[in-house]
Length: 553
Image 1 (cartoon, rainbow, N blue to C red):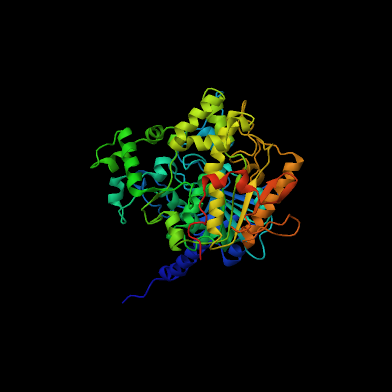
Image 2 (image 1 turned 60 degrees about the vertical axis):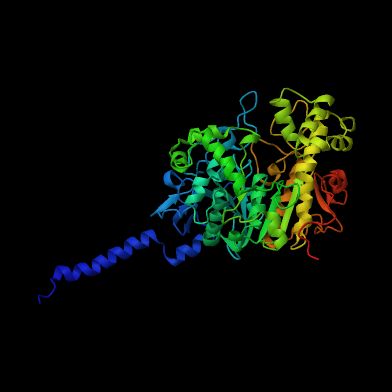
């Protein structure tokens, strides 16, 4: 056999050397990987390297990092798939597009009803499963606690990029904000989609996206200086309801160690109970028919072929367009209250609460700005009769219009107490049977409003606390409000670190117990516990149950 030529002999080590060189360009050496966990703007993930940007406060921000494959074409209404790998260093200095949604420009002047950029622009981009990471100025040493934020918006609006995580990051927390599929794309259940599924169920794709983001955090957050074993799942409004669902989800086990629920519950009486699979499929069938996909035999193909604009306009806008989880898919096999009663929950320390005047925002928007003006005593009584039926007289006796400065405020109090305040307290009572709970009420009567309110002083309206946790350029806080913001970010960060918000330099916050029923009031220069919450919000009227469901005896 002929001996290899000199050229061949030399070529082999050169080929190996070239391969090693190319490999080193794609996969930096261990020293570089170690440095990336500190203050480098170039950081590795399990799909490739990303380059972020320095924040003005000295921290870092990485935006538009894919945590799943684009859920487009044949991946519409399917569980999220892993993102593709990339070579080189991916630019992560700009946010990705929000998930598809109509703009919330509902005000008479064409302005948005919420301050986030997504609410102004909307989106038609289905390639939207991206997240953003905010880190403190220094991340060396011990890994830092992580807070994963699920935005609100009725599971129909909003984006992770609407939230500036720098204030919480400055407190020593790695903050992750997440996009997830919204509206029909995120929560549509339909018999045709269920027949394709291994568990013969559909819906909850938005929840699946959120858990995919949590798994990304578990695999990657160490490279950003975060501690994968100290993850707090947090959300507001729909994001809070979704957090509540993940607490009851068997597929979320181990993905987070603490939870924060702000103005949204699903586990107790009065909370937003998920639809059953059958009810969700019925609603999905009605939706499919409305967009021209009525034939069950071809509905899945028909729906996947529809342009995104037709799906969005088929969903509409306003309260009727809001979507949510359903029970039946593997991610949420049973209703949260059933999971609690059976002890099948991810019971973790929880910080939970509401704002004092939640519903005033909705009254200002849907009654004053979009509904033709303020309520009168007669129209208030008629509206309560329409919404409460046989119980209307008792509601009006408990909330007489004459007891409030206006019928608008009486109506707001009814809905605040029934829909938000008392369910939040019920969640605290329930959660406290299995894990530590810290309950709060945000109560700044002069919180900066999102929308004009000619007839409804908004007070501490729904979502008003967000500006105190996530800086918003469009809203300015007074010095007293800035002090409250500093206290709140300290509480939230300490809770993310330890499961207990208490620390030196801030007012003591008692752990919630059903026996003492003490809730921390968060108000400018007035942060202290109260035992008067249930009386203030007439919770004995709305939820007269003597003991929280699922209590350990």
